[in-house]
Image 1 (spheres, rainbow, N blue to C red):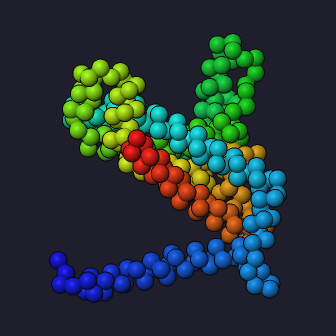
Image 2 (cartoon, helix red, strand yellow; image 1 turned 135 degrees about the vertical axis):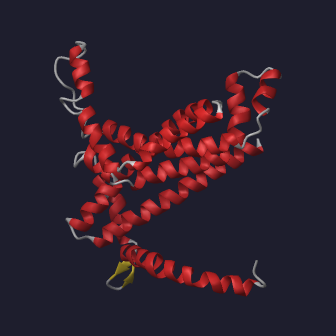
Image 3 (tube, helix red, strand yellow; image 1 turned 180 degrees about the vertical axis):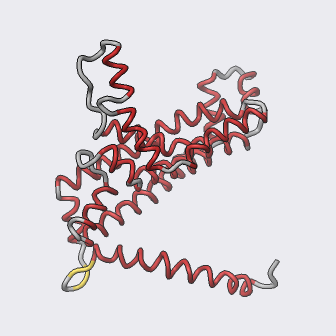
Length: 275
């Protein structure tokens, strides 16, 4: 399309400059706050963050919930995607539309719906008391369980879409061939489906994990001040404490965790493919 490489780079230069000025420069300035000190550069802010019990608890909680949401989303996503790709084309299109539909609804509205369901007078507590399983409503809101449910519902469609795309690109005769050779369904999934759809799993896992780490609305509404996560802690440090150094540390931790998750998933997928 272009006569030489210099011409293509020149055409891309305005977009690169725009992205650098609008996105990259502000992020670099923010992240530099965590290493800035009166006498130069220091990692004291990072040391202080990880030696504070509250910060360490929030970090572990965020990592744990992100990992749990990703694993459960992968399990449900594979089951759902396998069912969808085996449907006739017309039914497949309808089911994909139903999967995509929640993404068109505001996360705020989707999260507030869980308050109606999980509240003390919500559907779940009414069902439990009506069946005689409990004498009084149980507290589900403002707990890690509520945050987990909200994040899973929020990001599960991304995992399903990624896995559907990967399964549709898989050879149609791979599963029947494995079954004819005597493999049971567990062996078919572990030795055929999983290796052939590893790219979809990496993409879906990265989207779900990083989304769970960086989501603010859902943890803030369903967890409140009792279940702090890194993103809600970041918001408090900026708006309440006006502590940009600590906020910079949290932002850098979130970035590192996101990239590390992607690299780990790629490494696991590569290792599995080699075996």
